Image (cartoon, rainbow, N blue to C red; front, side, top):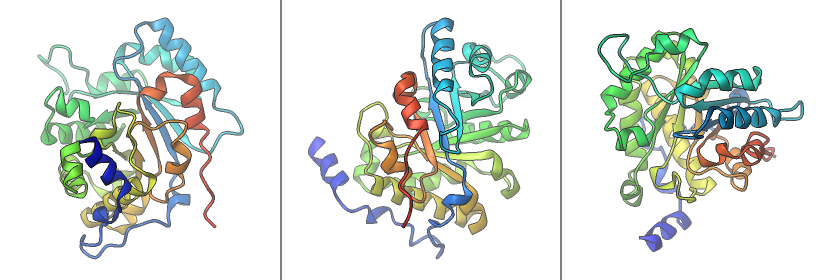
Length: 288
């Protein structure tokens, strides 16, 4: 399997090209109009309020006048949201790792969008692969989350991506198409300004493996073409698509130099303020 993966990573990214999607072009000229978005997902970390506050403060300190003009957000465990907000001093957004699509009622352990909105949360994740795989969240459930988040006046980061088996069968584009179409069902074009997409190849999450910038760019271009097919080219050109597969300080510059990669959803490295600070302060190559 390692040999198969290595072969695929070393091969051409042409398999992901979006040429067959209703004749839409792959948008790759609108990067300057899309503000970069660097985000961190803390998952089930850290293990105390003091650690969370220290980490949030240190991350916020890495944002300086010399930092790129980018949006920055941290998605943190519910119990740390308000403490992290206080720690960052408004230098970045603090969001939720998920929501319950129900408004209220007998849903033990659930957190509603209204609860989050009441404490100032403006961003929430939906569709992360760990929620899909470990907790069995379906495309319909994820779509309900997206609709509820948007209806609350908040913004959603919809996570999509293929498994290793699907990647090895060149199904990345097909999987992303299904997840995008089902996840965004009922979302109007005028509401897309409150949607970001995070492409996270499942085989790269927490493994240290990262798709080559060329492969990541090709899948992102495919996703943009899918959105153009669902809405129109203007909508596709404006939606931010982030890469979320084990982004590191060593890989971020090359990834952020790709025309259709608008940011990063960072897992493990967001728990290290020095590493995440370097990712926030990425150095994308300037197109010639």
